[in-house]
Image 1 (tube, rainbow, N blue to C red):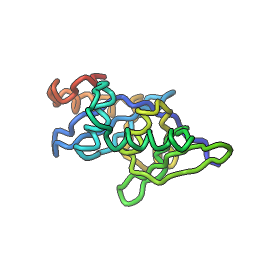
Image 2: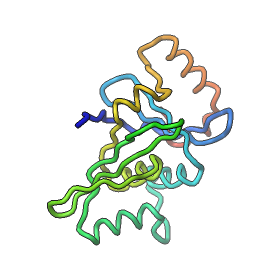
Image 3: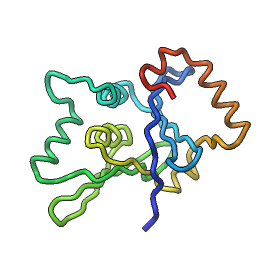
Image 4: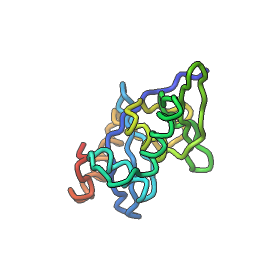
Length: 162
């Protein structure tokens, strides 16, 4: 079994070119960022939880968390598991009694559930190897990333300033 790499959700920003939300995951013990472009609704679902916004009725990811709980299952972690044809794939890992199971997911949905269940986010090393991840220990990449961040408006970061 491949050892997965722990990632930390650093925030959600808007891509200045296409104005699409980007999840920024940072490798826990290294200076590597993994950007994943997602839809506006998915970004909103994650942002609601990060901002501790209470909705009058459960959102889809709240509903899923509640279903797991009612069935006696717990989400243990999520994994950004694959990158194929520029599309990321994820898995939700869960446990019920003595059975472990894996559920296929979009990364945005897996991350939205992870923040609600307060479980770790991991990435497969092959994903990091083949993705357009950014190594922050490389001065050229640091400069490129800094220029991109400087081109963003402060409002683009919302409460997720890095």
